[in-house]
Image 1 (spheres, rainbow, N blue to C red):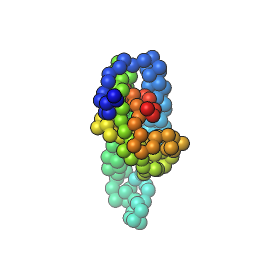
Image 2 (cartoon, one colour; image 1 turned 90 degrees about the vertical axis):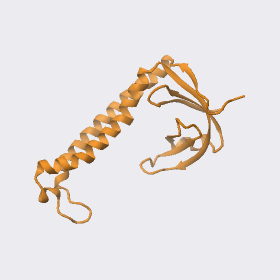
Image 3 (cartoon, helix red, strand yellow; image 1 turned 45 degrees about the vertical axis):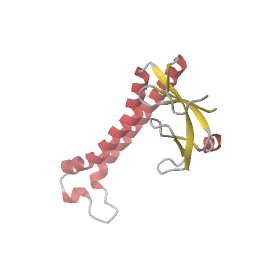
Image 4 (cartoon, rainbow, N blue to C red; image 1 turned 90 degrees about the horizontal axis):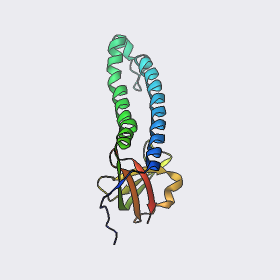
Length: 164
């Protein structure tokens, strides 16, 4: 009998390590690109007008103060992106085990905000409640389907998912 949402610890294979290393390299490239884009926007942001036709920040305060004000938003987002994109993958690479479990698809949400080319799959597992997948896989995981999941022991990185 299959126990739903019961964790089983298994050692990480070399294929899993290679998959995580590939994901780490891709995350580093994405983070560097985001850092460059956000630094450029951050440096010109005091000169931009707001949506409500107010004056630009540079008209109300000095340039360094305006940069400090805008850094709250920009560097807060970059910190969050670093944590979700790079730090969790690094944690997954440092761990030497993975967690295998069976879970049931509770709900699917098509094209949620900020993920227009993906869909959100919600599961019964408390530790791994949801994940985003490409829209091409939308019909592969129907609601109520029992799934087999493998995720890293640390960092909550999805290594494998398939129907049972």
